[in-house]
Amino acid sequence: LLSRSAGTLLLLLAANGALAVECGDVITTDATLTADVGPCAGDEDPVLTLADPATLNLNGHTVRGLPGAQTEVGILIEGERARLRNGFVDSCESAAVVVGGAGGHRIENVIARNNTNDGFQVQSSRNHLVRNVTMNSHDDGFAVSGSGNLLLGNAAFDDAVGFSLSGERNAVIRSTATRCQQVGIGISGSRHRVIENRVVASGLD
Image 1 (spheres, rainbow, N blue to C red):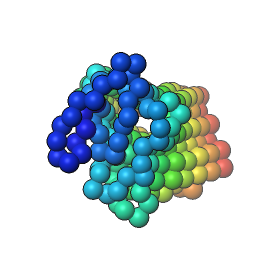
Image 2: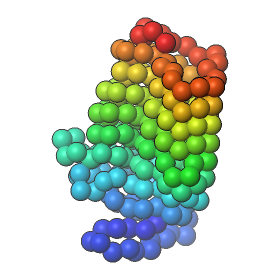
Image 3: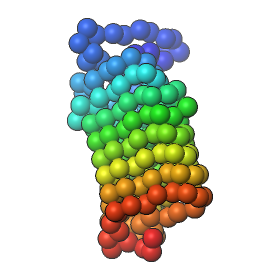
């Protein structure tokens, strides 16, 4: 774990992988949260950065921006083949989780709540998002602009748009969009696979 606080880089390692994580930290080795992180102010943006090949286990805890403070991103994933799982991200202006870098990341069992713009922004390619949930995003629950991504068993509730696909060869399989005001599943780009999904009480897909 690399901490950027006070403009310095400090190596903070615990023998059991359970680390004290603070606003603005950059995580480069496997870590398990022992407490919530935040609310974090806008100058601590993103709240956390996860870089390959690390795995961050949120362990049921919440990573939180500070409402009204313009905290843009909750967790930014960089590099290649990082892993994020098991917790909550909320109260961010741009997105709860931005999946960037070279791709090949895996995000599972993460709940994005009450974010002003998007829940998950999938900007890179070849990522797997499995059993994640978005709730009350003012724009897209899952905004996928990369290519070759797999979204399996995810759910969007009360977002403006549940799933928004662009790029190429993305797949949304066995996922659900419920009470999405504009569109349940919106598709542009080409060669996507949209299989065995449910759109409930939402705009046209």
